[in-house]
Amino acid sequence: MSEKQTYFLTGVTGTLGKELVRELLITAPHELYVLIRGQKNLSARERLRKILAASGIEHFFEKRIWALEGDITRPGLGISSEEMDLLRAKTDRFMHVAALTALNGSREECFSINLGGTREALSVGWDFLKKGKMKRFFYFSTAYAAGSRQTYRSLESGLPESPAHANFYESSKYEAEKSVRQAIAEGFPATIFRPSIVVGHSQTGATSEFNVIYPFLKLFAHRILTKLPSRLENSFNIVPIDFVIKAALAIAQRDDSLGRGYHLVTQEPPTIGMLLDVARQEYPQIPEVELIDPDRFEPSALPPQEKFVYDMLTPYLGYLNDHLTFDTSDAQEALRGTGVDFPRTDRGFLKRLLAYAVDAGYLLVS
Ligand SMILES: NC(=O)c1ccc[n+]([C@@H]2O[C@H](COP(=O)([O-])OP(=O)(O)OC[C@H]3O[C@@H](n4cnc5c(N)ncnc54)[C@H](OP(=O)(O)O)[C@@H]3O)[C@@H](O)[C@H]2O)c1
Image 1 (cartoon, rainbow, N blue to C red):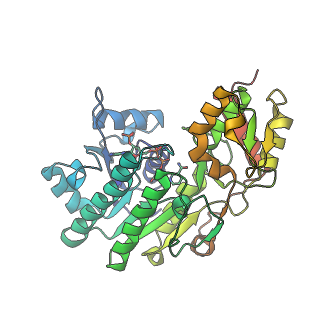
Image 2 (cartoon, rainbow, N blue to C red; image 1 turned 90 degrees about the horizontal axis):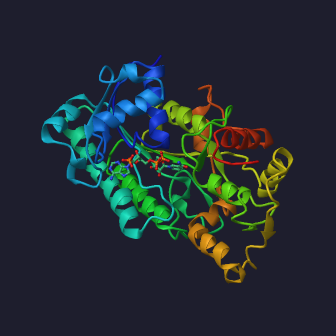
C-alpha cells in the first residue's frame, strides 16, 4: 500500500475522474480535496455525495474526501481564499483532469475551459509549489493533442510543430499541453498522461459514459446511419478505462516520471473490419454497414437526414480512420514491474464492450 498523501483533483464528476477517486480511496489511505462546479439545484458537496454513493463508497464522504466549489475558468479556479489557504497547506499532489471533452464544442468554450482552465490550474500549482508543500502535478492531456487529421507517429517527448487538428477539442488540448510543457521547462514538477479513446473496463466492458465510438454503433444499430467513410483495415485506438487509471497512478508513483509525458493507449488497435465482424457475429440483427472509401465519400450525395447526422459527426470521423500512431516506449518502461500491463484490445474485448452496451440498454438490439 502506498504512503498516505493528500491529493487535490479537478474533473472528478467525469468519466475518468470518478474512477480515479475510487481507486485513490480504495487502494491507499490518501485524503482527497476535489473541485466541483455547483449546479442550479445541487451544491458541490451534494454532487460529490451522489457520485460516491453511485460508486458504493459514500462512507468516505467528508472522512477522506471533501468537495470544494469552484470553476476552472475562474481566477484561482474560483476557490474562496480560506479554502485556498487550506488547500495550499495540505496538497502534496495536484491532478488536473477537468476539461470540455465534447468533440463538437465551440472554439470559445474549448479554449476557455481547456486552455484557460489549465493555465489557472498551473498558476494555482505554482503557488502551491512555492508557498505550500505540493511536490507533483499531473495533467491529463489526450493522445489526439497531436491532431487526428494527418498521418503522424506521435512521440511521448513532445508535440508536433504543425499539427492537423480535427476539432477545437484537439487544438485547445494541444495548446494546453504546450503550456504544461512550458511550465516543465521552467522547473514545474508536472507529468503528462495522454490516453487515446477511453472505453469500458477491460474485463467487464462496463462504462459510465457511452462516448465517441459508442454513438456510431448506436446510429448504425438503429439504422439512422447506413454508410461509414472508412476502410476495413483502418484502425481506431481505444483503451480500457481500468488500464488508464491503473497505469496513470502507477506512473505517478515513480520519481523518474517527473517532467515527462506518457501515451496511455493500446499498442494493437483493432480494425474497423474486426469491429464490424464481431458485431455481425454477435448481433446479426444489427444492419450491415456499407463502407465507403473516405477519399471518395461525398456527404452531399447522402439522403438529407443522413447528411445532417454526418455533418454533426465530422469532428469524430478521424478517430475511426487512425492516421496517428503512438510511440509507447516511455510508458512501457515506466510500467515494467508494476503489474500493470498494456491492454489487449482484441475480438474478445470488443465483444465485452458490445455486450455491456446492449445489457445496459444503450444499444437496443431486438
Ligand atoms: N474520455 C476519454 O476518452 C479521454 C481520452 C483522452 C483524454 N481524456 C482527458 O481526460 C480528462 C478527463 O476526461 P473525461 O472523459 O473524464 O471527461 P468528462 O467525462 O467529459 O468530464 C469532464 C470533467 O471536467 C469537469 N469540468 C468541465 N468544465 C469545468 C469547469 N469549467 N470547471 C470545473 N470543472 C469542469 C466536468 O465537470 P461537470 O460535471 O461540472 O461538467 C467533469 O468533471 C480530460 O482532460 C480529457 O481531455 C479523456
